[in-house]
Each structure stands twice: as C-alpha cells, then as structure tokens.
Image 1 (tube, helix red, strand yellow):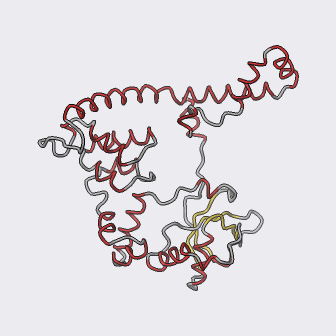
Image 2: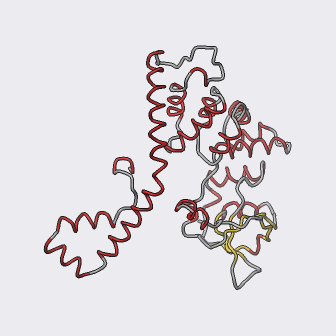
Image 3: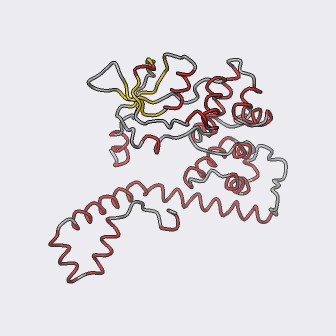
Length: 305
C-alpha cells in the first residue's frame, strides 16, 4: 500500500452516516447569540429562507457521552432560534463524531453553486414558486431560472468534481460549450489550480481544440482573441497539463517527505545543546532551521498570500 493509500485508509468520517431527528429543547448551545440578533437584516433573510423553503443546511450537533438525552449544538444557532419562533419542536440534524465547536465554523463549507442549484430545484419540485425563491434570495426571477438550468449540458463526472466548489454560474455556461471529456479536463484544471473564476474558465475554453467543442463545425470566437492567439493558448495549455500531471505524480510523496523533515528539524531545535552549538558555530544554519520549523505551507511566499 502506498503512502497516499495508507493515509486515505486511515481517514475516518467526521459525521455519522444517518441524520438524527431531535427535540430542539434537548440542544445545548455552544455560543451566546447577541440580544440584537433579530434586529439585523441577516436574521430576517435567514428567517425568510427557512419559512419559504425550509432548512438548506441542517444544524450540526455532537453527542454528550454522559448524557444521551441532550446534545451540543455545534453549528446552526440562528436557524434553531428561527425554528423556535416558528413553534417547531423537532429538527433533523447532522451528528458530528466529536465536538469541534471551536473550529467548526472555520472548516464548514458554505453552500456551493451546484448545492444551491439542487436546493432550488428541490424547492420548486415541492411546489415553492420561483418568485418566492427569488424574493428570499434577493435576486430577480431570471437569475433563478438560470440557476435552475445551470447544469443543463454538464456531464455527471464534471458535476461531481465541482459539486462542492464555489464556482460562479457563468463557469458552467462556459463548460457547456465543451464536449463531456473536455469538461472533465477543465474541471481538473480548475481544481488543480484552485481557481474557479470565470476568467480562468474562459482561458481554458480559449485553449480548447476546435474538435473538443460542442459546436466543432463553427469557428471558435472569443472577445479580444485572434485565431492565432487562441492556437497559441491551445499549445501552451497542453504543455501546462503535461507539467501538472508530472507534478501530481510526485506531489504526495514529496509533501510527506517535507513534513517528516520539518518534524525532525523541529525536534532538533527542541534540544538546548544543539541550539547552543548552532548559535556559537553555525548561526546561519540556525536561522534557516528556525524558518523551516515555523513553516505552515509548502507554497512559495507569493503564492501563499
């Protein structure tokens, strides 16, 4: 088993597989809401969404080992208050396997474009008028209709790759112009570059060979791009893809080795005798070792900003 496979095998799910329906009265909050909460526009927006559509994101709770009748409320305090105002007594929750209340809100991934699309489609299928959804989300009806059609022409594989990514809606409109295989490649490009902007998607489209477009019989036209520039982008993008593939093949092992090396250097600096020796005889080494031990990313400084 490779190092990457071993790490994947050792991972455990952060949440229980099944949702749990609990009494709202059994939830113990992990933070105090401000007294002026109901006076803010954000509270009104969330309340309107819950009343018109229902809960988009379930609250997250954690079990209390010595008290099976109560649960810690890790995330969703505002939603729970709104349900109380609506005289709702039970709620379906996602159960965290540990109480990560101090860091949960930093790690939780808010609603991505595809998740929002599915939420809107599900609401319409339940009979919620699109005008009501537009009012709740504070957008016009045309935007809601575009969101409903967002995945038309997007292949399931590309959809799965981008299901939790925060892509603008126009990205999917750009992907739709490519054949399914190219959509998957483009999604991989965006994930590897951690860039989900419309401009980057347009650059990928500009670098897409004509035969990989849905309308392969029509010349590719992009605003401000000459045919010669698009041909050059196709060649450069193909070379970039080859380079990314080479880096991906060794990234996991390289990152593991760097992590082990950093840990070793950190342990060395924990030995006062070694630090005294370096201070006296190799101060330039000491400063470099200290920089290594304080690293939080393997990215260059300009990329990490």
